[in-house]
Length: 220
Image (cartoon, rainbow, N blue to C red):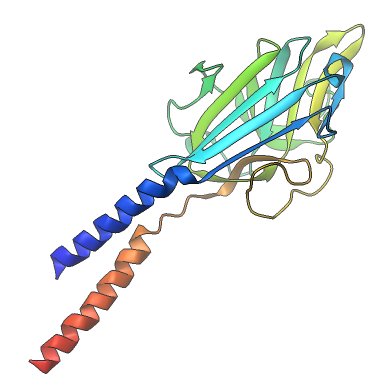
């Protein structure tokens, strides 16, 4: 009986890995469609896009691109759930503009001079920026949910350049992840990790095969 259980579990595992890449989401916000609230030079044509998919190992790949046109990006903050730590990022997966990179910090990001114009403090992961066009990518076991975003640049003519998603001041939507946006929010990691179905499926297989074996034994 053992070999049948092992075979069944192996088939379930192969099937799940084969369909993992089918789970993916894309979306974007811009100042042109009202999805981003911006100040200074960033008020004209700034764009934030994302693409998120599930890897073969069932972790999630988070990829974001930010285009602001003028005035270099100083840093960005992607809101994550307040139990998120550096341990939730798959080691060595962070890339900034397609090159290996690092995050600045994960924790409470307060509004104020450092994050001027941000509507309220959030728990987030902070990355530095060095140009008007940046990509940020990392892998995590945490599943994607709807959260907030903030970015800041320098001053131009006395005005700070910054932006955030238009839904920042609204409660984060609780609907499931999907393409596009939900209430002008972005997809970012949740408190929950990816749930793998194999152990439960194998447990059901054991129970089912055990029942068949027991019936056959009684007949004998």
